[in-house]
Image (cartoon, rainbow, N blue to C red; front, side, top):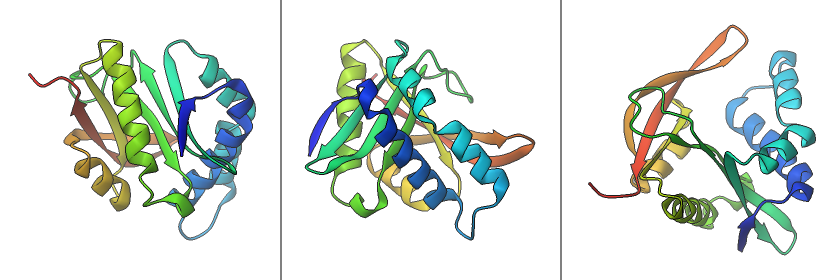
Length: 171
C-alpha cells in the first residue's frame, strides 16, 4: 500500500470508487432513478478533479499494484454542524469494499491527521449515516467521539447522520 496526494489524473478512479462505495453502502435493496441520478451527477470526473485542485482541501489516495483502492478528502473552513468545535471536516473516507479489513482506512486517517497537525489543525469532524454500523464502529475504534446529529439531504429527502469529532491536540 502506498499513500500519496491525489493528482488530477486520479479523478476518474476516485469518481468510480465514490460511485461504487456510495451505492454499495446506502442502496441496499436496489437503485431507484432518484439515487442513480444523484450518484451520477455528484461523483463525476470533472467535480472530482475540481476537488483535487481546490486549495481549501486535500485528498490522499491509497494505491496498490493494480490502482487506487481508497481515498480520504479533508476540507478546511467547514465548521461542524452541532457546536463549532472543529472547522476541518473529513468529507469523505471511501475504501473499496473488497479491501476492507486491510488497514487502509486507518492508514489514510492517520496520514490525514498528520497533514492536519502540520497545518495547525487541532480537531477534525465528520458525519456518517446513523445506520452505517461498520463506519460508526470504525470511527469509534479510532478515537472519534459522537457530539451530535445532523441530516444529509438529497432534494427534499433527509437522512439522519451522526456527527463525530476527533481531537488532534490533547487539551
